[in-house]
Image (cartoon, rainbow, N blue to C red; front, side, top):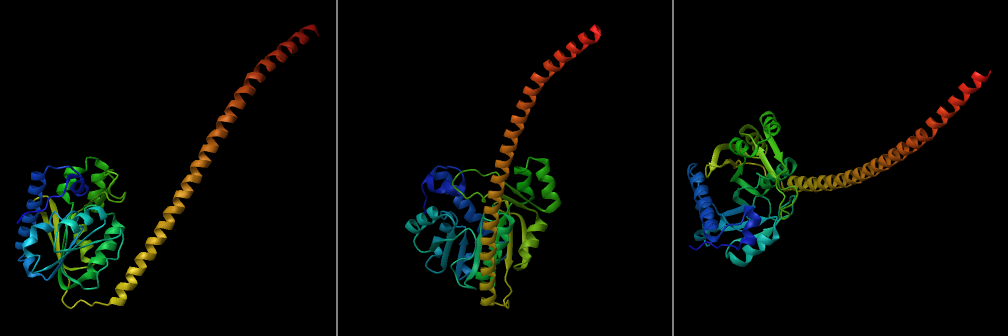
Length: 311
């Protein structure tokens, strides 16, 4: 099996770094081996599933490890980055690729996949977006299906949270969303999310059953969570469609609020600038008054004293 190696300008959109071919290949294989090992420890393997989704496929660095299964299993990959998805379409034969929006829904029908994995995706989403996508993944996951995701947990927090206030928030709330990615490639909301064991487990338990937490489960680095959907879980497509509609309405409302907030901020900045200008003008005027009034008062005071002496 020859793993497809994308050019640096493609894979750097996923890795946030530029590697040579050998280093990219090593890391791709390492992730595949790590994912296989993580699944095997729980009695799972890619080969046991019929239809699989790589949610956040990027340039296919994990998916290509399963090329030997492409003829037996239906593989799908979706990502927000059309550049990397188009590269996958042109260079990885077999799987079906699609571009998703920043918010749900996906283009797939309800209960479509038996297994969904998402590596280094929920490590970067803000809370509202994370909850919306977990609900959508639960929708497209079939009853009896398995979902696997990775998160930044305690170990990563120790590595990447040098600010004591951020650490305190993480310990107190179980999560911290850090604005530390500014590459002008990924969207502004794509930052770094940290979730404690308790918080990550509680979040996934709202959407899935039997959530298993594996600390540093993937390559001894990111935490891993493996959850299933109960075989008899109700699949009410009308409910899911309504939920997706509500998400879309909330999204539109949020965008309107953001626009209104931006306008309000601009108005406040304009008022502040006007206030600062008025304040400067008043200070100038007061200074001119002082410069004129004090000498005048002193002059009149001296004249008055002179007259008193004459009287």
